[in-house]
Length: 262
Ligand SMILES: Nc1ncnc2c1ncn2[C@@H]1O[C@H](COP(=O)(O)OP(=O)(O)OP(=O)(O)O)[C@@H](O)[C@H]1O
Ligand SMILES: [Mg+2]
Image 1 (cartoon, rainbow, N blue to C red):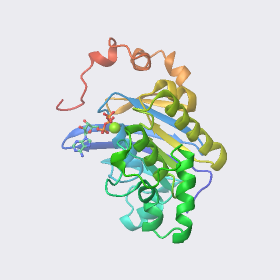
Image 2 (image 1 turned 30 degrees about the vertical axis):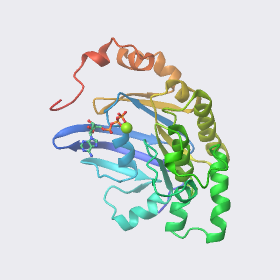
Image 3 (image 1 turned 90 degrees about the horizontal axis):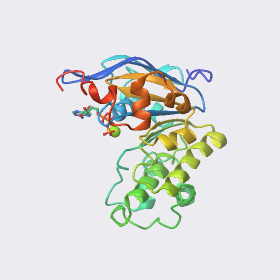
Image 4 (image 1 turned 180 degrees about the vertical axis):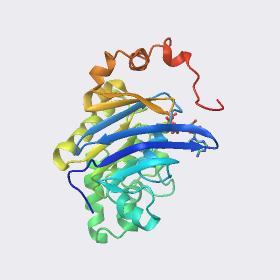
């Protein structure tokens, strides 16, 4: 059923409404194998919702979600587990288990799904923590970590099952520039070394310019543009240019924020 030529992630006419409010409105996106695609947009525009749809943690109102060519829109939970095994999600707030150590958080899926013999898990966890520059923190609890450190543990956890598709929800937000650059480097390395396909929600234009092949600007439920970041910065669409430059004045701040009921 896997089609190796199919886009790892494909959204077709995807819409999502919640309590009558349209959050996503007829969104199309095809992410090519090994591509790194950024999703930008103002707070509350539906970026996290989009990632949750790709993971099929929520179901679209209309439209289709295809992963490696397989339509997962109507799959049952049991089949979704198989799809999700190949996807890693870096949650916006890291979402670590507070009562578990860093090592237990990172190795959680490996233990839960018995993916590795117990005596091999510490080595895998050590490699994952090395990758995010968190070597030697195995025994710490989340409460003992800074926000940026928690974020990096969340990334290590998302990579534990060696997923071919990784979804990042603001991976560099709140990180110092050096840690942010290290995360950018990791995203690129995962593509070049193990062919990972990535979707990265980010407000960090600088970071996306460095890593993303293309980026989409989400506004009022739709993609205003999907293109290389450099081209978005010179877009003919003044709303796109306004977002990229961060200017408080322009069409993006003149229009109503919500499609319905806002
Ligand atoms: N579970 C939920 N219940 C009610 N409303 C929700 C829920 N999840 C999302 N929303 C609404 O959907 C819209 C999009 O939310 P979402 O979290 O996807 O935005 P976002 O683009 O990720 O924002 P941010 O940049 O602040 O993270 C918001 O208006 C939010 O209030
Ligand atoms: Mg969000």
